[in-house]
Each structure stands twice: as C-alpha cells, then as structure tokens.
Image (tube, rainbow, N blue to C red; front, side, top):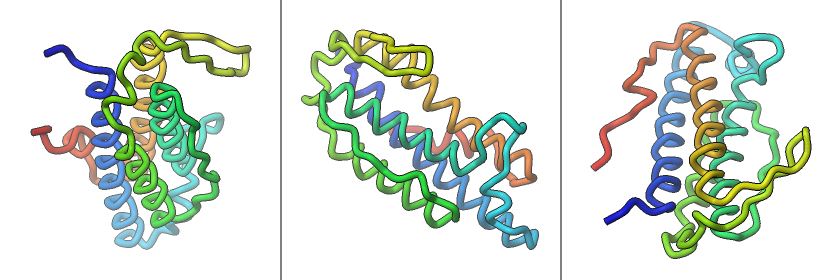
Length: 170
C-alpha cells in the first residue's frame, strides 16, 4: 500500500507537536528550577532577527493547521497569536492537535494534485498539493519546531535528540 497524503502529514504533525509540548514542559520546569522568569524564556530568540520561542510555537501551529486545511480544501482556523505563558503555549498546541484530529484521510484524497496558492511577501506562489506538502509545508513546520527546541536547548534546558524525535511510532 502506498503512503497517502494523510499518512505523511496529519500523523507527522501530531507527533511533532506532541513532542514539542513535552519539550515545552521541560522548558517550564527548567525555568522554575533555575528561578528564571518564564516570560523571559518565552521571549528568548536565537539571534536578534529571529522570532522568539512563543512565535516559533505559533508558526509551527499555523504551519500544521494551514497545511491540513489547504490540503483538505477547507478554511484554515484562525488562532490569535497572543500566547505569553507556557500554559498558553500548551493550550495552543492542544487546540492545533485537536483540529488536526478532525481531519479525516478521505478529506486529503486527491490532494496531491490539488492546487495550493500561498500569498508570500514576494508575491503569490502556486504548488500542487504534493509539492506544497513535501517541499514547503513540512520543511517550514520542522524549521519552527527545531528552532523552538534550539532556543530551549540554548538556554540550558536538558533536552536531547530523543526529546525531539519522541517515542517510536507504533
């Protein structure tokens, strides 16, 4: 049986977001244990021109829910980008996972050929669904998840590769 567009998107997003949630839990525990201001950790950037941790989580959420909706041909749910605490970031992830769980495999059937248009800063770009998923959406999603991981790691949170990868899928 061939891999479906659903197989290479929705479960992948859910797993990575679940792992990101666990990483954020470790970040919150680290802040408490070190007597750090959690708000400061949430506003940490790797470098001045990159978004802080909160925005990385928001962009990962946006990437996952946007991809799912575009491939399913439905409206993208809008979440305000107003999270400033670890519990709020956890709620954002939970809402995103909840939304992803509403997407059914049948909704993504044929989405490999469905046109997907993105309005980017440099102008619109159109993909077929397969190229969008594999060449844009997944790399963009994992960029933000990785950057969130890197910010926490940079600030001394004791996380490693297996925290990022998570438990082996069954």
